[in-house]
Length: 178
Image (cartoon, rainbow, N blue to C red; front, side, top):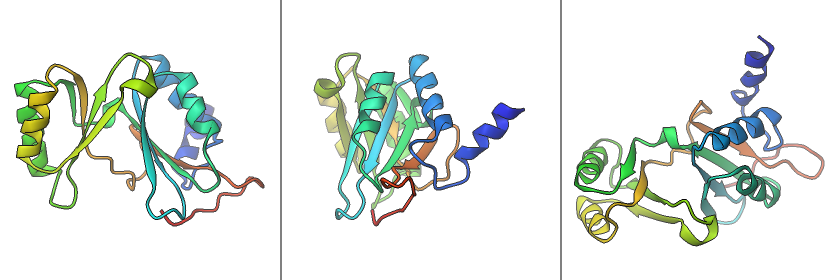
């Protein structure tokens, strides 16, 4: 019972990036060979952001170590993506169908290429907004492992998506403009 109460701490937002339940959860899922996408939004920088694919505890801790005060970090676990698999005709059709339901003219879909090699050299991201863009991307990138979906960082924390914030030096969470 204590464990379930402890996990409730992730649902009372804002959540600190120092939250041990958050850290343990990400480490556990990475240890179970589930990739995670780290979406970082930097406060008060005019919309600056970064994306990383995380495959290991070390990569996750490297991201945590480099966060500055007020930075927002959203972790999207593999399970949060609507489509997962090898880039092929079937996945292209699924992506086109998903674009019609989840994407709109303001929000396309992210295609995140997964690789088993070093994080810094292999990750690739594409934000695609049309069927034509998907067709072109798939022609150039067949048979790669991909995740496809939206990066809805504004949704409430849940089992597949968790947003945390880096506290100030005094340990207080002060959110910025993102």
